[in-house]
Length: 374
Image 1 (cartoon, rainbow, N blue to C red):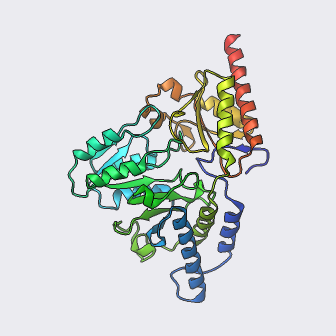
Image 2 (tube, helix red, strand yellow; image 1 turned 120 degrees about the vertical axis):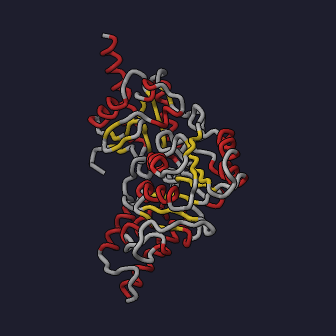
Image 3 (cartoon, rainbow, N blue to C red; image 1 turned 180 degrees about the horizontal axis):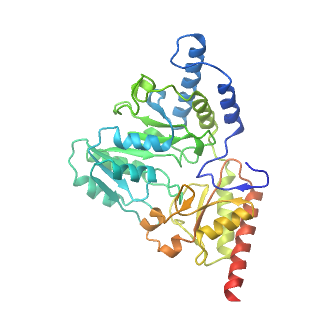
């Protein structure tokens, strides 16, 4: 991280943990293709399999169920398009890598609505499932935790409904893993998506966890890597760093307290502010705050000038802020959604960071309030 800069955008990407960075550097210094049979190749293969076991342990899965990918987006694409689905049911608040893949898949797609906090409507999901053929061709995609609001979705309950109607379930757990309990078996998902850089690992490496009884067609052809599911020489340094990050992926216990303290201070000092999804179970590190009358971009830029990194509550693509599908699906009006910022904490966040954030944010609010009044 840049010296003097307070980074509070962990849901976009977490700072790489020093242990993971050291493991990546050590792997880069070694030679060996994991598919080679000589000692260098065998050492590389051992490093990959050790990391696979660590990633599997993070979500209580079997190592044989972990398929390494280039990241969460590729894993989501594979779950939706390489698993034999004939039709898709997708929640209204999924990540763009799910919604855009679904839209481009050529398959029939149904959208499940959410309530005002962003929690999926299970009754609506059941109605959709009841109207589908019970031929095993229906795939439900529901994230475990939302990247914008932090809302935790009832994945296990949705999986039970899917089972009742002969459907399968994919869970995008990219934001949740390492922040809350994420047990592949308890969730009863058929496919689970993970990404290293949300955990403090390197960017460009992720995984699709595939239940043993489920199929996934090759993502890339031309070799037998990843049990024939993804050809190409494995990204050994990335995989090794992913394994270390997975092993260390536990948020400090005080993170929830720091988030709640920030929100309490916001409510007390700026009663007009709205804590979005405050009525739902949320990730302990995520706060989405709307300040009516002050645009998201204005807040993000002002905080950046003050040396603090947060993001707009709306999704960002190539550095451009666009209207948030998630907040729109929750029923937020455009003005409220357009004034939201997301603060996301992580493994290196301190109380001093949150003090600095609040001081800069309330100073911005007071400055603009005086300007409007004068």
